[in-house]
Image (tube, rainbow, N blue to C red; front, side):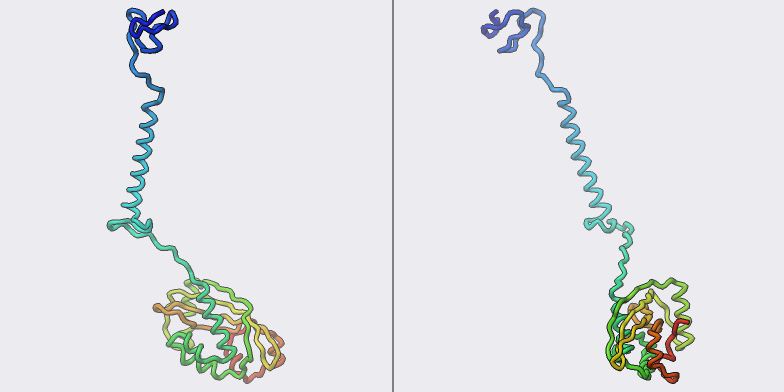
Length: 233
């Protein structure tokens, strides 16, 4: 069978020429360009996905700000995450513990709240016991609740006539080993470190635990140092 349009030989019975595509029977029209199923839908989905990504990017930029931390144009700023610098409180407490045991009055004066420096320095300068060395064994930090802060503030006023308001306060229990007359003894000192008016100070100390052997070996009822520190009953 010969195609009446292009003249090429084709198989008999074909409706369209396989070479030129023209119809071989009367009443049959040439089809338009073929389209694969989904041919229009796929590009449309790509366009929509791209538009969605652009919209999300613009929303993050406008409403979250370029740094992702605050809302732009007068929006309410997100509250920053509060991070407690535990090491700073512990360091002050450990330095103070060494200063008490070794009678380092300069450190005591430096780290005590200004309104408490005079009585604290006077107290520790009268200590009969001065240890030869001190090694910190461990330190434990505890956040003071608001009610406890008020109790401490009242106690300071009663003891020293000084009115203080804590912005924040932490108890640090410092375990130590100290040497006196060549013999080692262990104990704990609790140091109260408070943030007050932008500064960080020691406002209270207490000898909370001491080797019984130390009292047996060295305690003198007339001693000033141990008479002025709280002991566990």
